[in-house]
Structures are given as structure tokens and as C-alpha cells.
Length: 203
Ligand code: GAR
Image (cartoon, rainbow, N blue to C red; front, side):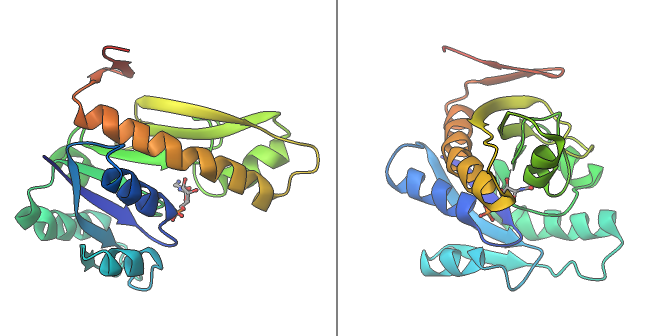
């Protein structure tokens, strides 16, 4: 059984999609052992509490000591025997402290086709640039920003009359599918990382 820690900062819809797909058996051999947030008022924490999942919050406001902050996270996670960390709308850059403690065991979802439109407001960046296709990327996390090896991507069309909200909603639907697929592949031992490349075995 793979013990997952999901990291959130806000709404938590990707966390909820993972939880539902574990419950439905779409993702097998996994349990969400704990939900971590840097934001004590993250809406997603309420879903965790009502599902009976333990939560940890360490407020990050006014914390510029990123490495120290991440060491506190590592200590807080120690008792949960975490195999995999899923960043799901976790809006804080992780340091090499955390990345090295969980090498190739941290994955993230980003609402654009990386390496395009990394960082904040990816959907707005895509709209402003005028691309015709966007989407989402699930990737392993390294110590750069949105730079780790890509696990999988899903595309969506961008329409002339899209707003940031309509495009974000279309991408979010695909995020919920993509993240579950990636976690299921991870849990089945089907992801082989070699440098920048992630090979999906038996596919
Ligand atoms: C999602 O769109 C996720 O891809 C994005 O934040 C949103 C969180 O939504 N993450 C990033 O932009 C990370 N760079 P959620 O809280 O409902 O899952």
C-alpha cells in the first residue's frame, strides 16, 4: 500500500478527485495518509476532515526561511511513512531539502503544457500568448520551478471567446483525470525515470 501525502494551498479539487478515484478503485493500492497545507484556511482541508483524513498545517505566511520551513514539513511527515507526495495546487516552491528527502517521490500538476507557461496564472499566460491548444502536465518535482520530468500531459482547445475562467475550467476537468492516471501508474510501479525522461512501462 502506497501512503500518499497531498499538499494543498486552496480549493483542493485535485485532492478531492484523487480521493474519489481511490475510493472508486480507479487508483489502486494507495491511501491518502495525510493532507498538508501551508494555508490553515485552505478550503480543501474541510474535505479532508470530513473524510476522516489527518491534516497538518504549518502557516507559511511571513516565512522566508524556505529550507527551514521544508525541514519542519519533513519532520511532521516522518510518522506517516509517506511513499509519495502529491502537490495539488500547493502554491509554494519546494526546496532541495524536501526534493532530496523524497527523491522522485514528489509529483505536481500544472495547468499548462510545460515547459510553456510555468509559474503562476498559467491559464492566463496561455490566453494572453494566444495559443490554440493548452492543457495540463503531471511531472516529477525537482528543485526548479515546474521543471521536473514530465509524466503525462492532456490537451484542451483554446477558443477565441475563452476567458481565464472558461479555459481554467476546461483544463481542470483534464487535471482531475490526468492526476489520477499518473498516481495509478506510479502506484503500479510503471513509471521509470531516466534523466529527463519518464518511461511508462507496459503501455
Ligand atoms: C490547479 O489548477 C493546479 O493545476 C494549479 O492550481 C489549481 C489548484 O486547484 N496549480 C498550479 O498552478 C501550480 N503551479 P485545486 O486546489 O482545486 O486542486
